[in-house]
Image 1 (cartoon, rainbow, N blue to C red):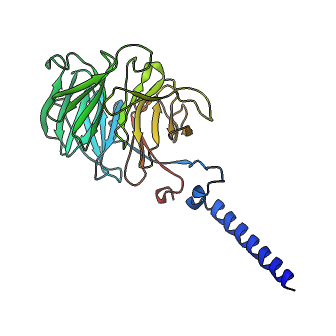
Image 2 (tube, rainbow, N blue to C red):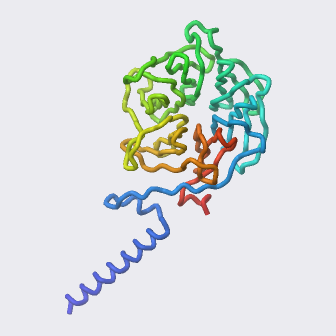
Image 3 (spheres, one colour):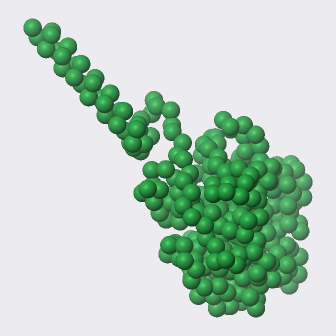
Length: 323
């Protein structure tokens, strides 16, 4: 009698657990992602809307601030355009101080813009008032001549990093424009670059550099002296980068990489590629020469498309924004 009762209890538990598992699976509940013996499910990017004020012309750079406002370098219109987190344009600025802005980053209320044509880093307030030229090509003997292609900042240390396509290197300045250090040279060996065009830091202050024409991402120690690892774009989906450009690191430490010539975005953890999304095209969810990616605090993903004069906004499945 006791044996039959035990068997019944076990069967009821098995049925209940099976029903719970099916419910969690069908509703894509994130609790399943914490179960170690189950294969990890990749989230599905969901297209939300476009950022476009009917006048963007080759948008290249994008960054978000603490308020989740979005700053876009509208490259051929020689300006920065700012949107709020509902997708409405707030303002634009920089027309009198920019020529070909290609990258933007925010540090403690200051907006740093790399200008490819003027070959300088310009600084504005978050409201768009011009503050200063932080550094100009050839005017600082320690920095020398440079062509800036991408810029990022270290909020804690107050440092600014930019990739230089003239000398195939990374240059690091403090917030006053003083030279701190640089690393890299022309070539295809470890620690060398060919037209680097993308840079981002992770939470450990490791430096990720898009070594664009070598088709790889090189990861350096915070002082730039050691190559920690090289990401080629290979993974379960196979393949390598065609032309990696802009990058972002999310709260979980995952690396997001835009491949401009593959017309997609790939996401990596420390060991492997997790997933990619996008393909060549002009429809929603497709890309036509994407360049840079940025993330906000609630899970929106912003991808600039210079070929379509727009910015595509996504989120991941499971995010309430996707409903």
